[in-house]
Length: 160
Image (cartoon, rainbow, N blue to C red; front, side, top):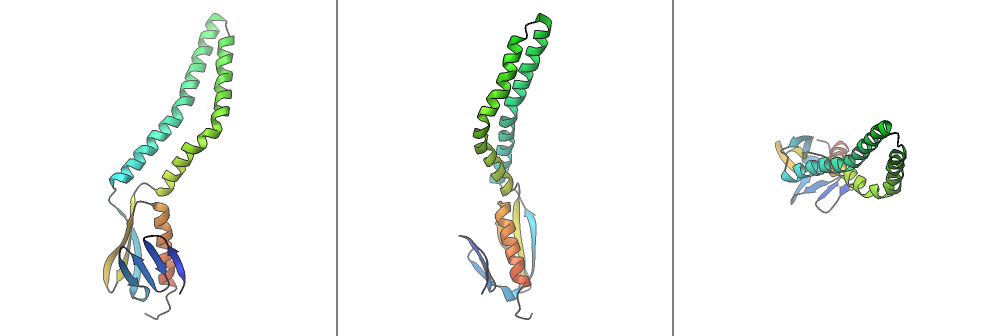
């Protein structure tokens, strides 16, 4: 028996698919496909959170740029370049000093994209009927499970 995928809720082997309390023998699965499901509140919240995080990461550089440009514009009129140069240096040095701390929010953003922005459903044709095996908003996990089920069905040698 070959193990293709296993986590707390799903196990895919060369013999069977175990998910959501059901056990499907691989030799009785004739077709595998996926489709998009209806979005859930959690998925919408993830997309909204991603947008807020991008906004929060984008605003400080934009505000700093506007401040430097306005100081440069006013320095041109008054001939006082020192405040504009100090602001420009601060807008370069402070972000470089804070760059290591961006690892945390950028990691959140990266994981948000890995998990996806829709609900995925895994369907199989089992004993002549269409059966929903798995429904999850986690795109990375879904892809791993889907590929494992495909491999298990493709490698089934029970002679259908």
